[in-house]
Image 1 (cartoon, rainbow, N blue to C red):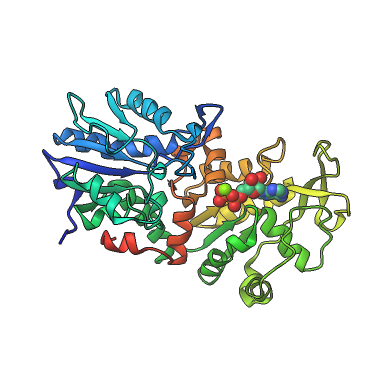
Image 2: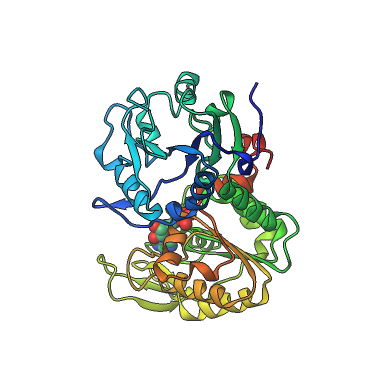
Length: 383
Ligand code: ADP
Ligand code: MG
């Protein structure tokens, strides 16, 4: 039987360390090293205690057969090596020579290149486990995924939660359990169907609910507003319609104006009040009056939880609403927790990471945690 241990007590051991180094990569370059930098503390601390490390991570969603070169972890390995100023031995196959030689760190190729990883095949976990003495799980982003390199290894080695997983869980708990009121939750992004449970979870607790993007469009569309050619989910499940009719939906703060475009190229942005949107318009961001209204709500709040950008942030100037609200949060004293890949990249591009109380590395995992779903790994880790 394996048991739960404390990561701080591990010394002089071969540690198998599961991290989430699943960073965005474009044209062979790392777009954001946020997740890598969040993984440095556990690596440095474990090295200080004279441990040797075998680092595991996944990258994207490759196929086992194809082993797409664009999803190799090698570039991440090189980046991590330079951030740590420490050589790392990169290994393609777990059947290759796994000796440390004179290295302190080994990194395995993308875990999802290995057959059995996503199926949580015990044989893969067993083979990997033979190379280590203990297992440290510090990959919050996959804490909702039962795979060989996540929960599988816990059946073969004593295991510990790493410090990043601990702090992620603490941040989520502080939002869910007894947050300082008023609590404002901002839930936005593309599709409401992926976020309805999140909205429902918060709609009882929150004092103010701000929706944005496709979620807001869909809400207004159901309320009978003209939304033109905007991103709308028209085919809605009953639970979403029920929520729109519920008492809690009254907590939704109505926007005042939008930034729209009727060009195919999405150029020529025009600000319109929400009742002036026409059939050819696409709503792509909130307007300045809406920004002001949302800012006032945030300034009144003691706690803010935010997931999902408020506009089509991939194209200028439609990131303005999101950026303005980030600035409001950066200047405020409220306790703020922000998660979601796309939301976090905007914060990073603005360089205000340090002014936000907590930025989560876990997009989907954070949402699952808040929804109280698929958390068997977190439970096993005693968190
Ligand atoms: P996160 O990754 O932060 O959880 P999502 O993936 O749910 O966020 O949603 C982000 C996407 O939603 C972005 O690609 C953004 O462009 C899109 N989006 C937000 N508002 C709009 C809008 N008004 N029109 C079109 N796309 C939008
Ligand atoms: Mg996203």
